[in-house]
Image 1: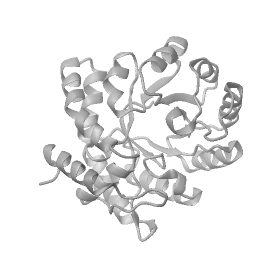
Image 2: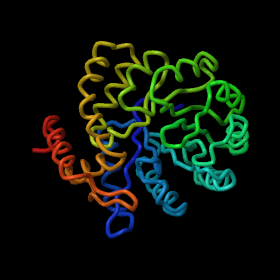
Image 3: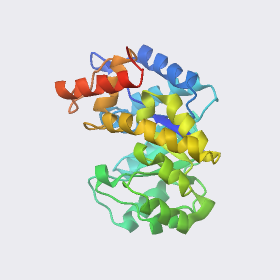
Image 4: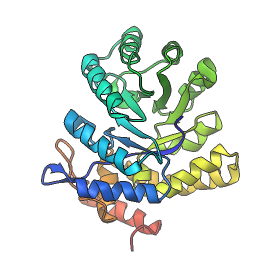
Length: 290
């Protein structure tokens, strides 16, 4: 259902408000460059500072622009199960292709708590992507818990961002083809696809969507020579997009591409002057800016 390179879209702001004109042009840029899906209101989109109304407005605009050409997924996860349920229900009613459900953060639930959280959301009829990112949440969805959750038909995929290949291996060992694994780490796209992942929910594809579409397409078709070459080609760009906390570098890069302002909502701030130089130099080396 979900495969290839799906961009975790940055959210453009202007004077504290969402810049919908820039957002529309940005989505067109993604679609014209062959992206395989759009993920709205994830961590790259500064979801923590968006209201539910803003998330739904951004998502509805993406749905309208995509017009069924690619899946549009809305980030509805929260550390409050009832709040997650309510926003996920609204996403289902609005016709999104799926929802992205980050593991509850700060609460530090047990595995049983994680299971019950996701089981509650799984009552809603919409394709659901679990999101395991312990570096941000202090909450790890164990492969054994994933294996229990795939018994719910609406849970179809997991964005795996635990920082290595082992968790993906264990998930697929326990679940087989009952779940789709999408990399949540841009540097691990090719390695994870080699063991059975189907693609990536990607940050760096904000600035270079075609490169990451091509990487995933090559890996999916078994063209390992091309995929491996693209893995090494994209690696320095990926590293630069994480020189500070995501989405600080990628949003600054998008401002250099003329796609949005480098405006953030607190507590995020623009990158340091030194890192601004690093980001600009990397974009020049890729031929993305003069």
